[in-house]
Image (tube, rainbow, N blue to C red; front, side, top):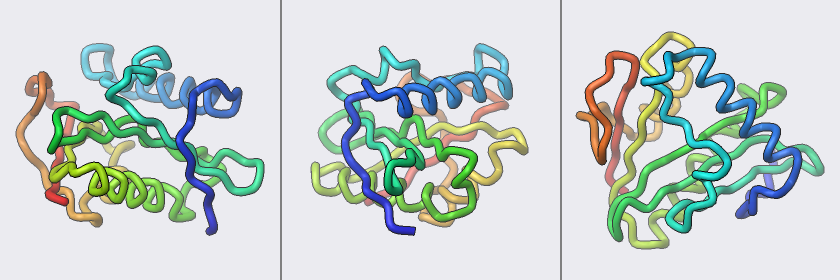
Length: 153
């Protein structure tokens, strides 16, 4: 699948709709205290870059990088539109963000995802790209519904 991945300013309706669906899905699958997905306003912070992936005029997915400090980054808001699940779009977005992080001098990436069965595909993707489970980081606390992962770049 050939994707065009660009920095997204979060003003387009397709991006806003996918981000709203992402947040609603997180809220549907986890209790409020275990939902760590960012809403639209939080994604506009200067330390966060959001990318969108497109196939023609179709929004395929989104992903974000939060710079924790000059050498560490956190993956945020990884979501592929349901129509494109299983096509490799999530892996393409993940690899794009990893390359961008390396180019910025970031040496390690961190993430939080769910530990429930619905999140198994995400955990599998991250593990297949070298992420390993770790302790909570950067303000997260222990949560049986969260899985924390990291990898060196």
